[in-house]
Amino acid sequence: MISIQNEDFSLGDEYAAIRTRAGDVGAIVTFTGLVREIYRDDNTAGAVQSLTLEHYPGMTEKCLKDIQLKAEDRWPLLATRIIHRVGELCNHDQIVLVATASAHRKAAFESAEFIMDYLKSEAPFWKKQKSESESSWIESRDTDKAALDRWQKS
Image (cartoon, rainbow, N blue to C red; front, side):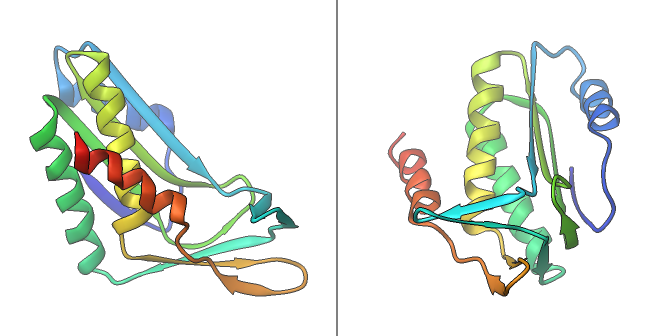
């Protein structure tokens, strides 16, 4: 199940829902990404006031669905949940939720990490960070792209 939304989400409610959908589950892994107060890049740091996320409706949902299907093809998952927020977010706001459920923990852990790695590198979201002194678009990092390499090899 995939959602792209402006409004916040309840981790507890989402956990309960995936547990119900998964049925006889042995493991549920959840990852929640948050807006950082301090942004570090190449040894520079700055205070973040807000983060604005933009996307192309339709195209973004298709991309997230493709990522979800790749994970479901690769691991024996009983349920998955991806929520990605858009709009202007403040420090410590929740940005993303990835939840995977499987009979075994290894599949749940690996699939959640796989989905998150692909979201960071492949999903068409544009992020603009605002600080006291400036606003700037956040570029993809080499480390995010490198994280995908291990999924190509295994």
